[in-house]
Image (cartoon, rainbow, N blue to C red):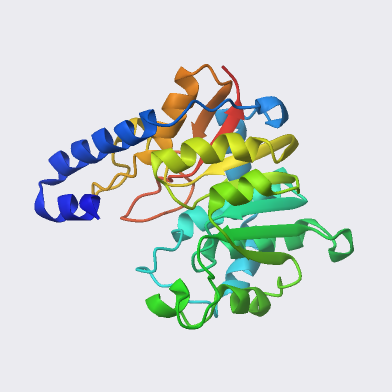
Length: 280
């Protein structure tokens, strides 16, 4: 609540500085976490660029046709269209059999990951996508989709695109779920609570659920806490969390996607997606 008041009443630069200071203070109050990065794959910047440059244009046209009836809306808070495409390309490149998503919201990113799973694996192989949100996202009264004005709940979106058998919805805070989950995943997408205190705890917990060579993907990652787009907005939490984990000598590095081969938002091609890689 305090952060929202600051954003409304203070100049953007001052509100931004105060917000970072507050997040650092809250983050530093947490006990140190150790990262078991033994299962994390090694991903270079050139590899990510190669994945995003893959010739999937004809395939992507089919995805767009499948999604044509789905309207998430520009003001829904859904992952922007360019990042959705990047998610699809990434999942097609990594070819995960099991995916965990933290932060379902209206199901925009969920649909991309599910479609990539369906394209990569025969249904008989039982590919699986578990998507977790702190609220019951399909609730007809309280779900974000209804409040924002989307025409379909995330579960209905999955049925519309033929992915209902691949996706399991879970209502739970992220950290208790990650700490109690008994499943292992090839790809984990962290896009829930972006506060530094949350991401600092989510990354080590997610690493414990990762299959060998697996990947962890972050959203709303702003390197050096600087704006990526012309609106000047910044979400400092993920970068602050990674900074502390690295200061504590945890063997992880982060590879921001940077500029994509297609538009994202605000007349830009810049993405806020970033892949966590094993490294010093």
